[in-house]
Amino acid sequence: MIFELSELIRSSIQQSLEDRVAISFSGGVDSTIISSLARQHSEVELFCAGVEGSPDLEYAEKAANQFTLPLHKTIINEEKAMEIYDKCYRMLPMNLLKVEILVPVYLIAEAASRKNHSVLLFGSGAEELFAGYDRYYAYKEEGKNVDEILREEFRTLPQREIAWVKKVCRKFGIEARFPYYNRKLADFVFTVPVEDRMEDRELKKVILREAGKLLGAPEIALQRRKKAMQYGSGVHKIFMKRADELNAAYPSS
Image (cartoon, rainbow, N blue to C red; front, top):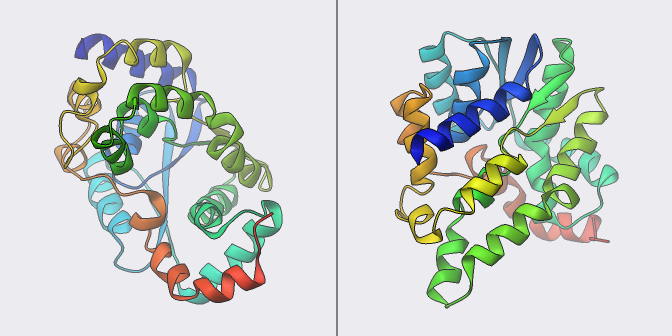
């Protein structure tokens, strides 16, 4: 099962490549698997954005060093975070918890455009396929049908996160691509019992990590615990500190 999964991931990533690609890179399992395969076929540059000392910057640098791939880091301070929040909100006037996700995406796309990239790869879809968020485990404890929830959230990604990321990237003339959002890959993963996909609550995404071993991802990424971009980049703490101000100035539509 893991071999077949790894081959489907390999195929989907290869279909997403051009001769030269940028990758949104956090040093986590999703982006590291993409990078591990992409570097075999394309000229690859990695891009990461985060607060000084944030987990994403730390792990991205360690994993990039193992790949010997160029990593372009954008450091976010409070002033920069607030400036980019305003720009993201004007594109997509949503609530704080949605807009904050887009701040590192904006900075990564901006940095990739400066390097004349036209294609930027993201790991979106992996959480819904492989039950990467802790809330899925809470749903399971509540007796909800987690497999049904995962399928529905995966199905609607193009109307939510994927649509938002694409819009931000278009501002910079960049096409966002999502190797994990692949129908053949999804059809296979959803045949795997949800209990197997949720085997390890602490580490999460166990079968993806097993596939990652076959695909050459470094151990440092395979053992990194999941942190969503707003937490791994450190921007969530900035925005929570100024949440009242932001919610007053930027009401959700």
